[in-house]
Image 1 (cartoon, one colour):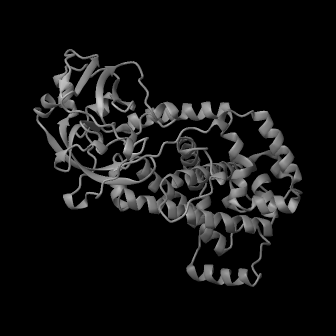
Image 2 (spheres, each protein chain N blue to C red):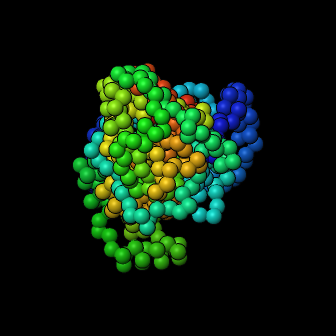
Image 3 (cartoon, rainbow over the protein chains, first blue to last red):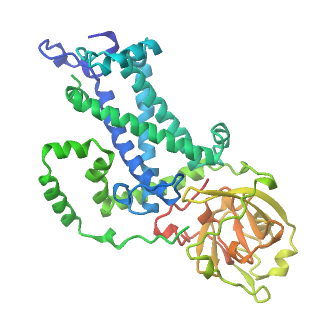
Length: 214
Length: 259
C-alpha cells in the first residue's frame, strides 16, 4: 500500500489481514463519490426542466426524463441538491488536500503522457492491472471533471444571485453568458459521465472497488 | 411567465406507483437494465419521477425552500446595487410577461385609480395617480431576470420606494411589504429589500407613462429580485408582520426570490 492511501479506514485492525487486497479508495472518497453522484443526478434532472422553461437552443428535453414535475418543483429540487453538491464537494477537496491524495494520485501529468495513453487505450493496450494507480487518461479525466464541477458551481452562483455575486458575474461575462457557461459545463459533465459509465461496464471490477474500497 | 399550475397527478396514490414500478422493473432483463442504467434518462426514470409525487419529499423540499429564504436574506447586501446599463443596451421590444395573455391585460382608468395603503403605517390616506406623479422621481436602466431564466434590460422611472415608505409613515421594523394588484396578482417582499436604494414605485417606462402591458398605472420595480417579485397594476400596499405569501409563492416558487 502506498503512502498516498492514508485514510481512516486503513487504520482498522482488519487491514492487518494480509489476505485482503489493498485499500484503493478510502471510505471518505467512496462516500463523497456516491453523494456527489446522487446530487449530480438530481441537479441534471431538475436542471433540464428549468432549461425547458426558457431554452437557450432550438430544443427542449423530454419532460418525462426531467425531475420536478413543473418549473417550481424543479427549482426546489435544484436549490436543495445544490447544497449537497457544494458541501460534499468541499469535504472532498478538504480531504484530498489534507491527505495529499490529490498530489499522489494526479501528479505527474503531462499532455504527452495523456496522448500516448489515449492511443494505447484505443488499441486496447492500456493496462488496468493496478487499480490503485491512475493512468494519464484517468488523471486528466478526473481532474477535468473536478474543474468542470467547480465551473458549474461558480456559474450556478451567478444564475442564482447575479446581483449579490456581481464580481463573479462580471468575470463570467455577465448573467446571460453565465447561462451558456452553466449549460456547456453540464454538457461536458454529461460527456464525462457517459464515458465514465462505459468504462465501468468495460471494467466492472472498478464498480466493486468504489463500493468496497478494495 | 406562462401560466403553470401544478398538475393534478401530484396527489396520486404512492403505493400504486411503487407497485407499478416494481412490476415494470421486474420485466427488465439484465441487458435491458444495463442499457437503461447507462443512460442518464434511464437513471432519472429509475429514481426521479415517482419520488417527486411523494408528500414527504414535497414537505422536505418546502422546508429547504424556507431555509433558502434565510440564506438569501443573509446574503442580501442592502448597499449592493444591481448593475446599470446604457440606453443602447435596452431590450427592444421589452417582453410582455404575466400569468395571462397580453389580450387580457387590465385597462385601468387613471381618473378613478387610487393606491390604498394599510397596516403598520401612520398615514392611511389613499393616493391618486396625480399625487404619486408629484413625488420626486428617479430613473434606472437595469436587468429584469425571470425565474424561467431569460432576462431583459429595461428603463424605468418612478419614486424611490424608501421615499414612499417615509411619506406613508411605514413602520420599517415590520417584516413584510405586501402588494395587491388589479389583476388579482399578489406578492410580498422583505423590509430590507423594500428599503434598497434601487427598489422603485414605478410610474413610467422608457420615457413614457407606464404602458398597460408593463403595469399601468404603477408597478414595483426591484432589480434585486426575480420578475415574479416585481408586481404590476399595484392597487394596495400593506405593511405587516404576518407572512402574506404570493400568487406564485403559494404554488411553490421560493418566497425570497432574490437575484
